[in-house]
Length: 152
Image (cartoon, rainbow, N blue to C red; front, side, top):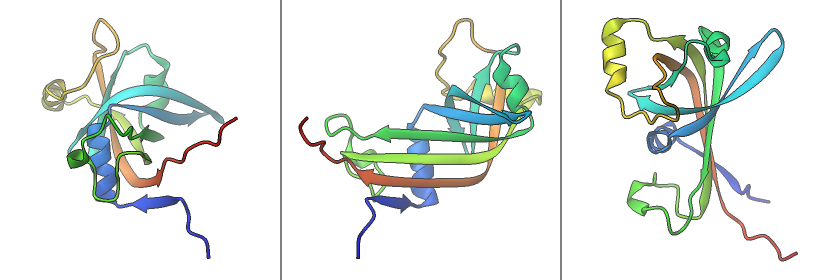
């Protein structure tokens, strides 16, 4: 009997990892073609929020559409406090969380004001003015221990 090097993690552990992450890859499809975009995001209660420019193709493709966001990271031994890790993970592990859901532009002025207060890192200047919320329909996560590569 073999054991898989990849182990599922719980929803709660997945959300804990998402709260510490800042960058992911968002995939969406239109007219049979899939596009992938790098986004910096923040968790807002039980959704993901990111900003974009009104003329960016991501906004046109992702608005009111099904999307998938994949976030992963290698937990380097010297860069991680074990206090910040979900119970199943230890420094040296790799993890991946996939969020599937629907993207929608935030248009309500009250919700925009709340989104403006989120600790959302900006990659561009000037600040992208459009907020997008991804409401998940599924969140799955997994982790595995990093393995040393054999010498070449």
